Image 1: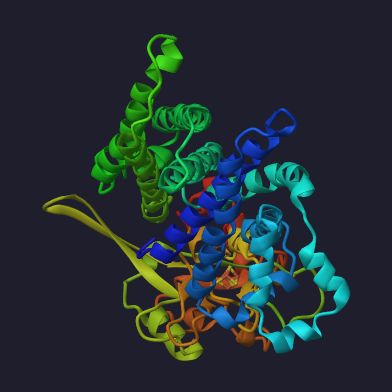
Image 2: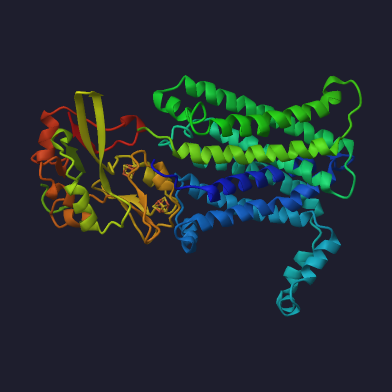
Length: 325
Length: 187
Ligand code: SF4
Ligand code: SF4
């Protein structure tokens, strides 16, 4: 390929889509796990629910802007092409966005719902049929768990889709392996978890130890899983056909080497893993007491997000530079 | 040359006798003029390769363009169906349905597609389907002074293309892409 035709808008879109999927997933898990008949980590769940719809919405807007003909984007929804990852993914994104909005609604308190409705200009509000009004007033908190469950496969689908969009392109050997989808999924879930660490620490309400334990154990697991994907990706690629080997040279000596090893692997993956493991040591070893050092936790969370962005940046650009010639 | 398109099972393809290519680029110019291809983008081009060691140098020229693949990945990934394939194998873009997502540009292993800077949709070689449908040859084929390019119907045993493929050794580029490219390069 001569020049990349997908650039930063696509990088942002893949990152933001994955971030939303991760936020929803982590929040849904926090909702789903019960303690005394209530969700065990309500504040985490709520933060995730409040944040989840927005990155993906912004990302989709960027995707539309990246089109040569943005005003024609609706055509995607009038031609269902099941063999095109972009066609399937667009439907998935729409479903996910609506679902995450419903999920957000279910996490709003009554006064929040009412103050939102009060913002609708009176003239319009009067026109809303009573049935819809009642519906908007509905307390959906009992639905949270069902929405969470419904959301698991869809959020995972969105996370995977951001990888499949690239992985399904056999013309680009850097992408076309069966590991890219999982890599993007775990990275997406990890960035969602990290975003919740950051959000929860910025919250006025002091964070509880068990909340951090939940987020840390999840993020550590996800980062380790990501490592288990990235390393085989490299090793297996090196043992693969020439086109794949040549493609991997992009990050093994080629132009993306430093970004990959320093910014993604080092600063974006291993460093936050080290910080989280260090913080979490008392829990893992069963010795000492688990403290939270907000500064470290915020750093780790920020780095995970940075690493997630770097991964997408590297894949979008390095992948387009590869091919069979 | 195949006769005017009657509804039989046709499969258009091109044979390229690259050894005869002198890199005059008449085909590139002819395509640009015929199809009003904007500045800066191309539907066909010549790959140049130098090999050997001074003074024993060798230069080879390979005409390149869309391979009108049997199983085109560009068509597969297109989310709107704007990229499509005719019964006779010619792969086209319906510009009215193209949203300019550029997915097909990325998915083409032969880098045969471009983003049209004027219409913001995607363009590519059409095998001059408008000429072929009139019973004429693609502009590049007609222009080539060294008769490098032979266009025709694979399923027509009388065509020059068919006979060349029946009697000469040839290769297709990167068959490992799985796309089933339909440009046959004579060896
Ligand atoms: S060469 Fe590229 S553009 Fe042409 S049919 Fe094959 S995949 Fe499509
Ligand atoms: S750029 Fe146009 S032709 Fe290519 S995949 Fe997108 S909609 Fe289809």
